[in-house]
Figure 1 (cartoon, helix red, strand yellow):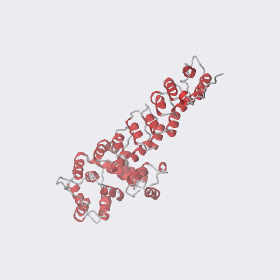
Figure 2 (figure 1 turned 120 degrees about the horizontal axis):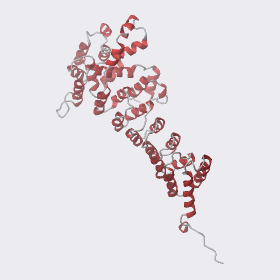
Figure 3 (figure 1 turned 90 degrees about the vertical axis):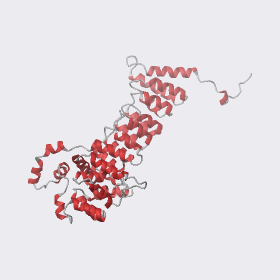
Figure 4 (figure 1 turned 135 degrees about the horizontal axis):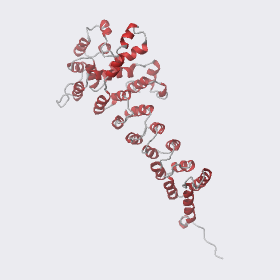
Length: 404
């Protein structure tokens, strides 16, 4: 009797017709309408199909993924198995299956690779919780897809995380500025490391008038004054709302007669730490906000300071000289940064400039506790959620300045 020779890999039989047919039939059963199969029968069939797919060929798994993608309810065992598969198989569900739950997507995002996460970011209606997890990985390609996805939903924490990531990749800034979830507090932190064009967009979009607030609270100023401004909480809020920017009380304690005199001294003798602090106090700012404005490489913050405090345009050039900055570039052209500062001064209204200045003063200094300063110095963002909005803004804006 002739015995068959041992089979090698090259002699392997073609794919089994029985297996292919069985996989198709099981998938058909899983896809039956609820009127023809109950939940337990569907679950039993899905378990059997999933067991076969674990050892099936990639092409067979892809066929099943394509077949079940249109279901209004995909059995969890199949969804989990196929989403953890090779990307071209998982893609059938990630791009075409509307029925995937957040749990399915989170499982895929956490366990699979960048390409899987990119496909999740492209889905319609990506929820806040899924967005948050995708953002955690900090992958620029995924973030770009999310930011371009008009149907993705960003949480406040998610936006804050992306704001922090824009520092490392300016390409994200332009896309983030288009998102409706971006709020003034986010934008005014982002401003400090944004390029000139992004800064222009931020000032045009978020430098809003406080007229509505002023009209609604006009009578409260008299109430607070009658109470001698004893309530710190209302005093802080009213300081943000009031029309007057300069600090009249600071003039009495200052060695300068007024803000103009301090600016003149800065132009003549240079912007020393002492002069910068006096200008800050006279302008109604805290010294740390003033330091941020004077150390910024661009000219826009100086323009905002001058316009908000009623200083003439010439004050920008005076401060520029006091900071020892070149008014003429190497090629003989006027300084582009100084030109931008003058342009910003011309384009922004006083009230709107005051809004920007007060947002900076509030968001950068209102909650700089010793714990926060320590966290900034240490670059400790592990406990980021423990901080308030102003604290987070301060951490983001000052972490570079402290060498973190």
